[in-house]
Length: 149
Image (cartoon, rainbow, N blue to C red; front, side, top):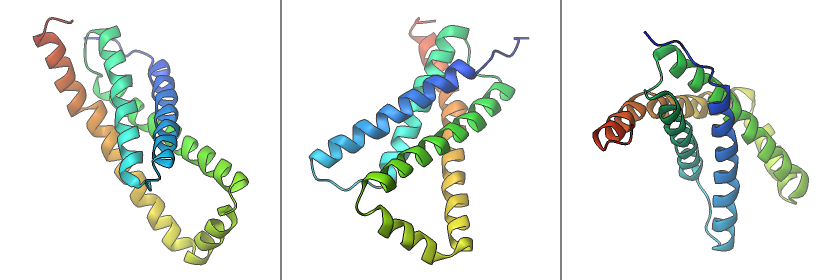
């Protein structure tokens, strides 16, 4: 039975890559004058999780155990929320539209905002769970099959 490894460095890797992907994709879409949507955020989330889990597999020669998977999911979710808050705060501070967006959010009411946050968190949780679970096992099997592990 394998001993659980510390997942901190993989969560840090997730956070750095997630931030780079969000900022990079936003810049590219801005230059192309294309409006971003939630798909961009989900793609960045999944890309960062896959980069973290691939590094985990390479380092440990296995997919994450159930307890490691849980830690990776919850800590990555917290990091993703922190990054979203950071990016949103920067937008509110430097954008002329920040005040308008803030007022629109306030006018929706607390319950609606809470429901939106819960739904978005559930979607992020599902994506992270898929990435650190099923997709991690498939990635491990593929690496073994191709002799890379």
